[in-house]
Image (cartoon, rainbow, N blue to C red; front, side, top):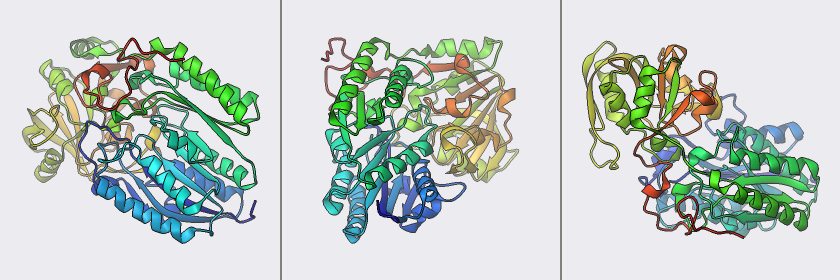
Amino acid sequence: MRSNPRVALLGFSIECNRFAPVATEPDFRERCWLEGEDIVTDARSPSSAALGEMPGFVTDMDAAGPWQPRPILLAMAEPNGPVDHALFERMMETWREGLRALKGQVDGAYCVMHGAGLTTALDDPEGAVQALVRAELGEIPFVCSYDLHANVSDANVALNDAYVGYLTNPHLDMRERGAESAQILRRLLAGERMFRAHRRLPIVAPTVSLLTAQGPYAEVIELGQQRRRENPRIVNVSIMAGFAYGDTPFNGMTAIVTATTQAAADTLADELARECWARRDRFVARLTALDDAVRRAKDSPVPLAFADVADNPGGGGRGNTMWILQAFHEAGVEGAIFGVIHDPELAREAHARGVGARFEARFNRASGQDPFSRPFAAEAEVKALSDGRVTGRRGIFQGTNMQLGKTAWLQLGGIAVVVIEGRTQCADPAFLEHLGLDIGAAKAVVVKSRGHFRGGFDEFFDHDRIVEVDAPGLTSPVLTRFDWTKLPRPVLPIDQEAEWR
């Protein structure tokens, strides 16, 4: 291996819900758009704008000895609808120019991916990025890291030398996977050759069935890691759950193995696919009806967390449906905290009125929203305001600089509601605490999040005190509610006749 390796750095990370509004350039600019040396500077900072993969990669490379990063463009956005294709083409041109300038001048490449990206014209933009790297840089060592909700195309596996996927859901291991990518890249730079195998199954699991602390998905992931520990020929095992709402031709739970022999990769990929299939009947959604959730919020002797899983901004939801808030308010629930509701107009109005103001808070007054964003109005008092600049404290956003935009705590009777100008899922208690809210004193906490809140709010609520509520929304785990257009059929759990051998 060259003593001072030169490594191209780039990334494209967004989870796209086919049914959500189109993602545009501001969606990336507001979350994380870094070009050139800003990528490395951000990765080395104590609180980065990027999620953990690139900081983990850079930190591990720094610790291993001298190297020369060659950064181009890292673009990340909150989960959304398909990316405007003209914007993606502009990104591709930036990567193309950067890679072309590096031809013959780099020894390897690392790319941060998500794996559930879409554009308004492409089902597999990640494959397009990887093909571009290969076209411009040739067969140099190339490692890609992916979210475990990736929908895995054949190109996603064939066009790199090692596929590295998250192991945890909620995602708590992003830095570790970036560091692992660096370690694998150094092995490739030293001359090791690696082989990949992948097996895709007709299982499109509801998101609520994909926790990694317990359940069928956790069992298969742990088996893969056990096999990796037992066999030195196995370099990486990644079992990608997929993202149903991407609605792609290659949706389906996929086992991917990177190994130093093709036989080892194939053998383990076959075993893991069989183990996933053996658990197929357990990948189902078990939700609590809204009426039952209201009753539990009023009567439970212990505090509970209620997850609005169907309106998860972490899966492309708008973060503004009113079903649970309206039901709790009408039932007179006391001691509840709701967070965080995406309503830019209401957040700005609260700031204009100021702390102490009493007024009728009108949610979802903007026109042209999705059919789930119904209006709701209630008398409110402005209790606290902030500019929404928050450093994540726990879970997926720990140590990450978050920009919530104008943020307001509105008190609606016995319910504290946190309204934000930006859009993100409520995965970190700091989003509520920075306004002065005491989560530990609340009788009920309702979060616009599917699962990542578990990694942030676990100090308040264990698994047995979390209620996943069945309400309408763009990310409902009840998959029969969607009009699929590209999803391979038959597929479980939608079609009971699905088969796999």
